[in-house]
Length: 123
Image 1 (cartoon, rainbow, N blue to C red):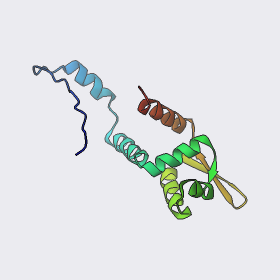
Image 2: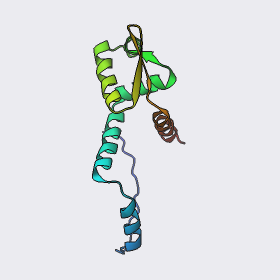
Image 3: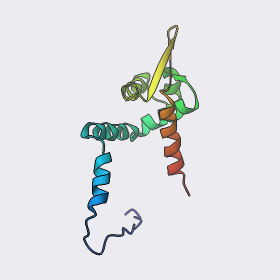
Image 4: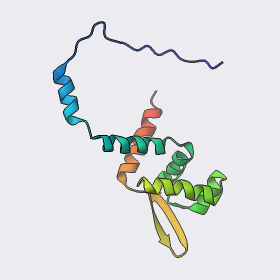
């Protein structure tokens, strides 16, 4: 049996509704489509293989062959994951002759990646 850590969660001792806070938050909430898209992004980032690919591309531009060799995976498997990442606008590519090189799509992706690693590596 796994050793589960107990987490204490504090709850209110009484029920008090704060309409001003509710209205403030409600007025800033994104629409359902934006929330759905954000949840989808987190789902895409939640795959360990895709996260490893993003980490590799964070360090260096790479082609499918290099990524396949790095992770001991087939080029087909890597291509599939890159397709998902590209559709999510997390990676981009450039062609050089017959070679295709992938990199992180933009500074937003770099920032998300850096912030996430800082968070998981906190003391």
